[in-house]
Length: 149
Length: 232
Image 1 (cartoon, each protein chain N blue to C red):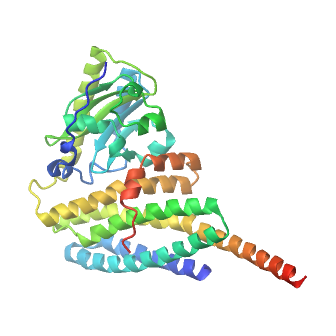
Image 2 (image 1 turned 180 degrees about the horizontal axis):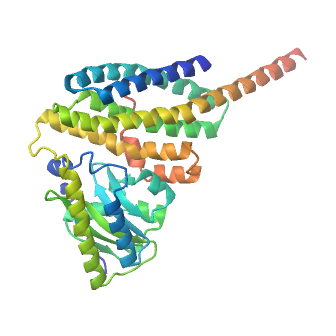
Image 3 (image 1 turned 120 degrees about the horizontal axis):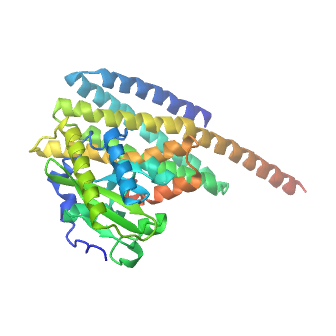
């Protein structure tokens, strides 16, 4: 779990570097960078969905309903924004100046999304994983003690 | 006595109207001029809430506001379908509601969630298109008299003029090709999803309680449900 979260955090660093490059880029350069950003974003999103799947499954297993509720809220918001961002990449504006102006909204949204994940979602996943591991370890100890009697 | 609601809401989804919404209009940074106008509207009417509400594709976005509860002040938006302002845009006329609980045809969500009762809204126009409502709201029933309504109408004109100036800083093209329209819709979807992130940000940083976070999400439930199926 720790490794998966660390990998996602490194993705965020790479995405921030690309966003910064896009912020500074000119006309044709911007379109090329946006293609790179889209590819990196898609891979990152898939990895993040897998993380959510894993943590949600564990929450259900250990019946941690409060973490599950919170994770589902973050996941829903993340999906709404990610789908919208995906749409932006698929339908790039043919007008370069308008594309640059509108990209500012995208850039802000992606930065905001990553900040929320760094501050709240990833720590929540790690805390939940650690709690679930302890609970499962305790369960197996109880089970083996009971079986030994 | 309240104004009858329009039955034809087709103007809300008019492509030309929606193409008016671009970054200058849906900017989240407060505009001091618009902010001063909503403050004045609240003082003039005695109603605690005053808004420059822009009725976009899926949300109503509060470009300026005074008096909103913490969750709405964070999100700066609710679903369009639950708004009263949609009727101002659809009819392109002023809408007066004295007691929302007595109006069976009004959406109930904001009445129940936030206790909204009285409402007076005036059309906001940008480049000749009705984009939203300049409105005052109270949580108790109320009626505004002629002189107050005239003052509010004058403030609405000023708000329209300010929005028009902002929009003309980067004027949208008058005729958009199919690919330009797709690009505009795609961008608008991001701008409209921002309120969900704002709520999450405020909650994550401890500035919004979990209860307020959930209430704000409830007011944007339509937005969340339509765009939440994974594309990845």
